[in-house]
Image (cartoon, rainbow, N blue to C red; front, side, top):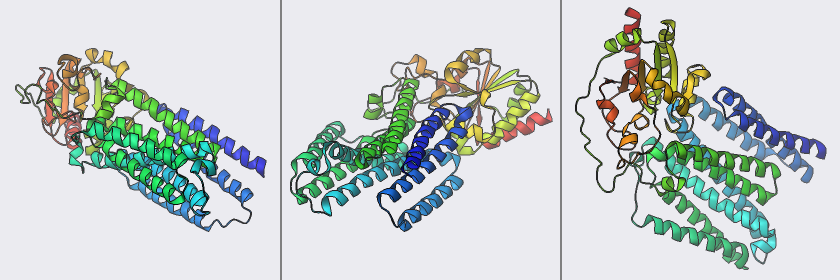
Length: 476
């Protein structure tokens, strides 16, 4: 039986690695997700078998009950969540992952130290490595939990509509709390010999971690939420890996380390895509101009048209690039975009989709959205590859994107998005921008593209506008 358990756990670890590798490409992402889900199932089965070996005759009632309840909740979430709310769900799952790791560490402290009323420091009772990782699991898990809840509220627009909340002296406060966490954690693990002091210390460490999670995320604006969600995902993996050390579970250590490393790599990729350092993101404030507005926010010379004029120009287009943004998700217009693209292809046009790394509210948001509408994977083209193609493109259609197509990123050093790589839609022969109004994006600044001679605004709900284009196109 011991050999079977080891084989099951080893197979689970291998499948986690393979599934993560498959997630690196849009075409294989769905398969990778399925493989990772199977790996998690094997991990649970292997763990339960291992428990049976360690504790013969163990009662599985509570464990099975927890599995059933968790499976039902997960299924309901997965079925009912809208694509526009997927980033919020990811943030919530990150938070639950961090909370679970912290609870595991707290339960070990209770079972091994509090219940037996063991005298001596936690390090003396558990050993130095478990004591250190126990404290880290609580600290990182607590930060992940409350930070993810704040990120969720910002994504929903519930918390000041996603705008940065800049507390006076926030950097000093965070530094003091960080130092306090190290001090309290050290005392909890190595200094407190009395049980009551150990309990007080662990309560203090937990409270500090929860407060830190809130303070680290509230100064970060909505424009940086994709990076923050990715970073919190990494935190949840690190917390899980720490919990694995606490309970001496190699599989949890491996799975947590994979999630932590993957999250950090993705975070770095997104920071590069925004031309900003991770430290700059964490400092926060993106979208708030503390020294006043940069230039005029008023528009002049904006040209607008309706679906009929757009359809007439599209009829003669030989190449069309769609540029999706969060507005596409809000309008649930992905299927309508696909229908229009099919009409254009039938008319002889080459159709592609330009994907900016930080378009939408989470990494890969646009890829997932368009995949749901059965857009061919090969038509989804990353920014670096598609940018040289715009100058040879007849029509670009921007659907709900804003900051990621703003030419000011190339021109104005005073702009908060200066230097950020953008999709060069302004190089196209003609650009249609589907948007409800001239309101700014998350960066809170004017989009100069709206005033370009080759750009035309098509105002309205993205789904209705695109459907109007389809109807007009069919009548031509």
